[in-house]
Image (cartoon, rainbow, N blue to C red; front, side):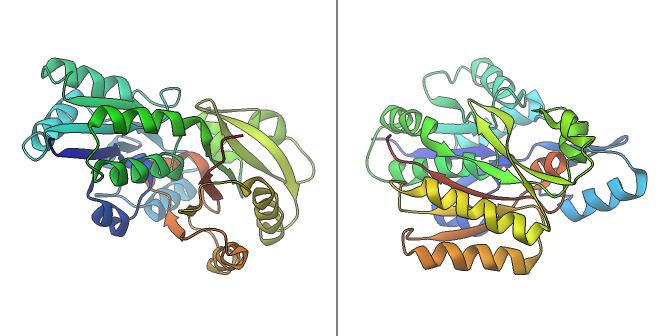
Length: 286
């Protein structure tokens, strides 16, 4: 049985420690600030994006990889692997998947490369990528890995709470944010990924530490029956005390084998803004 490679675009928000541990390859997407274009996680970091946005009062733009970048990436991957499974951010949020699929077709790799629409973002993708990497080491065929991942995909529970609605509203990728902007009382809504799209969920009020605490308790109520292997705390530069409190609470449950903190990359941070935090996991069968 041939060697299977696992790869993703950079929106999976997996740390280098995790990509090294599971032998996962990353293809960076693009962050655009005025007329300058950067590679996500390569030559720009979220703090640079926030500084630019604060200074210019603008919201960054993002873009998929170019066809040439996709083709070059595939050529390199196929020198190392017999088959490749590539994950993309939700098709409703980016053209990443379609660009990669065109590259696959152009190079005649349809029988060797599987392009997966994660129908998610951030470590909602990362959860599937890590599972695929583990399965790929279990002497399964690429087709078997893909089938198992597609069965898991609807069970990914991805949500987060935001400190500011400005980035989501300007980016136009989350319906319902415009109506909340005019609220006299500052709201911190939860954002849910449902069927590949972002939707406004429960609306929290108060300071961000109180909001996150309430949000996490709500997530704990949904965790029973979840896959126990791992849960992600992914944030875009939240107060370290808030992040530590979330980690402590999840560890107290004694439910998950691993509680993993990751930082959102440039593309995801461009759309959610600073202070965003999410708890992401794979739910049960029900």
